[in-house]
Length: 314
Image 1 (cartoon, rainbow, N blue to C red):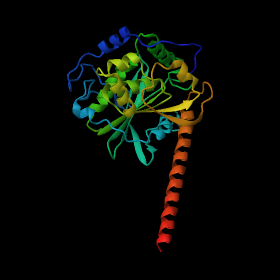
Image 2: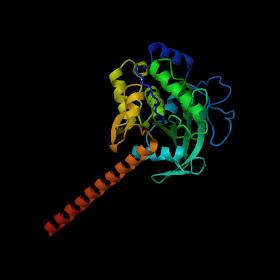
Image 3: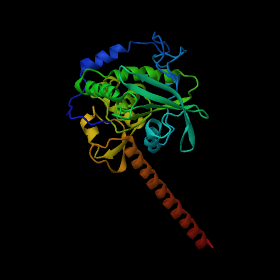
Image 4: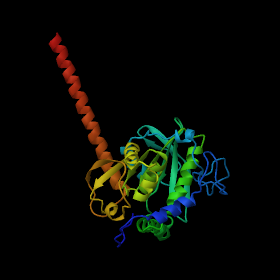
């Protein structure tokens, strides 16, 4: 994510949020919208094809697909490999802790800047919806055009004119829930994508792992709190894991609101503006090594204690 010489304050206004919500018309459960084509397309395909799933109000059965399966600490490395790794343009499966996820669907909305992938584990039918962060200058196919579109989304979220990525992500996510191939699903959001993951988690009860977390606008949180803000915050902490690195200046400057998930602090310090997923991946991998070492030490201590007890009984 590029750093811009701007200091942004404030959050989306009530009027802006009402405008956004009005753009997603009231829909009965299971009833699809009349969009000409779905948001999702097959990975690698140039355009979506007509299909049964459209943006809609999810049914209770579809909402029941939402669950957590992936180790949150594995997420930054997965995200970095998918979008910026050596196989970033390949359709080869990505192995995560012994599970092979293939690129199943993708979604792009040039007007809003929304972009992401749906990864699928064919063995279990579990899907990960990855919501991409802001484009990097000189490192993306859209170049500065994509960066400026994303920057516009950041400014919209900060200054209260609404972020259209939320509406289009809402459409894409409900299409994922409708897909009969998918048995279960969770969200991944980095940086700008974390705002969207937080929003979908609060609105639908989705499970999410976010890092470089930009938080959630307070107006959106209140709107989807179902009249009980404290209970909504409790649900969000149960459903969202927010991986945090100390010193991330970009999060402090560009964050749109409250961090609503359960914060897991990663080891190390991010220096200044180096707000990149690879930095988070290195820190998360270090946390995995520390966790595994602690487990091995605890298992070794328990084994020695058992051996000592056995000797005493003899």
